[in-house]
Image 1: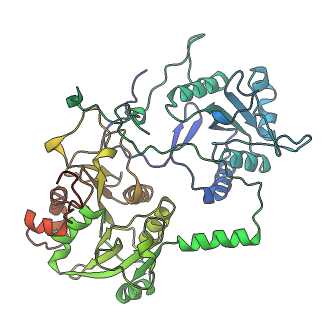
Image 2: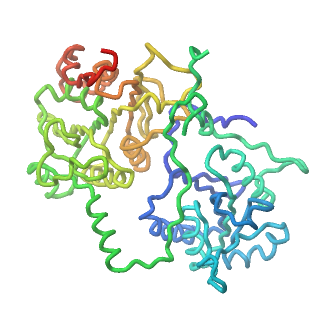
Image 3: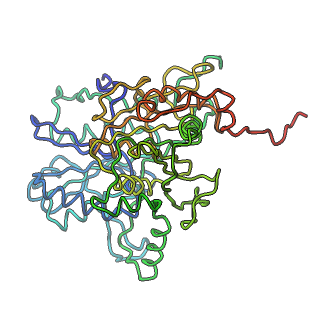
Length: 201
Length: 284
């Protein structure tokens, strides 16, 4: 792994950035900041209408959810989950199930009450649920791929999520049984603060 | 979050709670949310001359240069070196309320001297040059409003922006430990449309700029306005003449816009800095 060459000083990157790769026919929207909660609904509506207007054949939403809120069953096995809109189901068919991906479980609206209605719950996922439900309503082919993770150093979680996505989309070639060599962004440096004062020793 | 050596870093959680949209808001809830939003609204109040200019024709002010000072040292530097020349008129203010800027809740009157505030000044001989001194805290949900409302009053065409901003040294990330004579220091960041040379090195990755300077620079980047930000990292929390002096190279660009007094001495700068007195000393 090597650091991203784009670590030159003075390179301005703002809170939302769109990257595109014409060769891969891929666009990536990186959302670097949380959305203010009171604006979340508006954000979802704007995003969904933009996705629709842009005519993307499929959309993948990478997200995460609090690991500490998993139920007993979710503690076992893979921390990766997916959700797909009905429109996406028509595109992919049973491909994701055949790859043994696990669909995100619903939770009881009233835990402990039998026959209680089931609902989708993605704690720590921000606007993920809103974007998913709005995409369902607007017939947008969208799949959510998320990972259960905890606060802290999420670099390994990022690689796990990306490698999982790559097994489906084959964005980057990798030798058999090996993970691709990803480039690490400069923003991942010094996650835990600056250098140590030498006088300490 | 504490590091291994006990340093406390202000690290914000990247997780965001799910917005519970299953709950339908009743009328009372909606009214409460509306009132909260109204309380947190940013109001830009201009003086009569500017209001008149905005009211006629294009609804925007012609502005060639906007200089924004964020923080007490940046604002103190502009007060001492630029605004001290008495060729500036106070033309407006931004009033807002949030949990940390309660003092600016009076929307009908101008802030008192020394009170955290956001004030606009215009040069008498060159009215296309505006200065903004911002010493009050602007919350995350108010930053977008502030930039949209302020820049909404200015013509984008021909506009250049310079931001001077204070930052604590603790927020600067570098693999080499910095100490002593290297502090305070300045780093710059430019929008893609800014083609001139900055007077100091660019801020290195992986540093992140936040708050009003980041909001202004993001706005300028999106709208292709030439803008440069000079962020001064200091290890002193209170206003300090040494930190103010670090902004001196900015005078070279400013002197091309307006006539400035000769750069004040350190003594004059000290007058603009609060001297923090020790309230109690445990050992005497």
